[in-house]
Length: 305
Image (tube, rainbow, N blue to C red; front, side, top):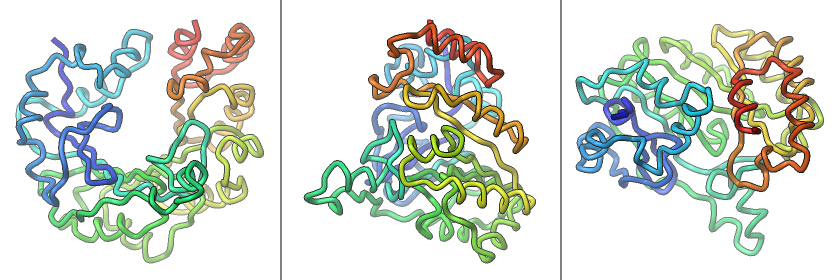
């Protein structure tokens, strides 16, 4: 019976006050009422803790990764957290879809710019925000991850951080598109936390990145990377392989090696028309991937095969 420690220690808040057990779960399991401490004690979480996750369609992506040679998010959770006690230790926060980019593979739920593109007659109707603010954070919390949209476009993340009573015990992570610089005031607040990490989303090198992540400017990304390197904060790069960027992965690998940070590569599986496995000539893709030393190389090859 497969279990996931996320159901004991973690939750994911998204726009429109939706509660998800993790960022991958396919449907919400509740509505956020302002109190994050009680979420893990709800009836639906009690049922999830008794469930074999391999039987849950919402957990299919982790099962697929485990079957194809990649350490899944479930396995990472289980390495980090115990399943002996219930208490929120890791909180993911995505309180709105405000974003300046229209990246390939994204859509209106996670990008206000995509909403303006998809619904030009009423774009503002699809700027999705959460109505509830997080009022109190539990003492058990030791990690918080800000998602988007683009979290650095608003001040909501900053206001949440100000409510943490013991920042020296908490790790802060941002998932960012690296087009917004940090202010001195923001850096000063972050310096009070135990650890600060930035996951920078980059899907190609140079002009190709700006093409598949429309609205981004490569020069801004380089400026952001330089800023983070000038602080005590850490950084990694996250890339999503899909049908529009696979040809550039050798150039991207060379860039990541130059920056000298950790790198994670995921394979886009939705929407399916952008899945690189649907390329008309999979052998060409396989040949290129085999020339690289990208992370999760075995998984990518298995996926293509």
